[in-house]
Image (cartoon, rainbow, N blue to C red; front, side, top):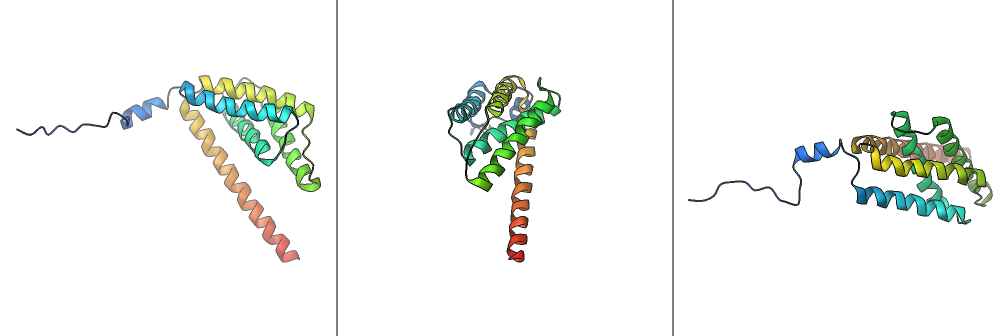
Length: 159
């Protein structure tokens, strides 16, 4: 008599297991990988290396930490995170205008606090909150890309 039981792959968790995992913090390995990436970027900035990719990476960390803090899970003052985000934007604007990448020491200090908080959040915050923060980051990136295209088309019309 044939066995008609349906066996689920051991490699793929069930939908229920996936849903439950959203209520737990991020798995340790993934959290460590993300925190290490942010810390390496911070150290590179601390040692005078700066470019758009590094600034974008630490900006993403600040945006995610800001979102999670506003959701009630962070320990930092939201004004401090907003200041870091604003200062990172100024670094990008200055580099676009002058071609010089300069990250002030005060910004490095603020970033250090934000990266430390991001690391802590990775270990203690439910995965579901990080998913929402990631969605928020993606929406902001899409909006910025659309604004850039709109501003570029206005410049072309003006020429």
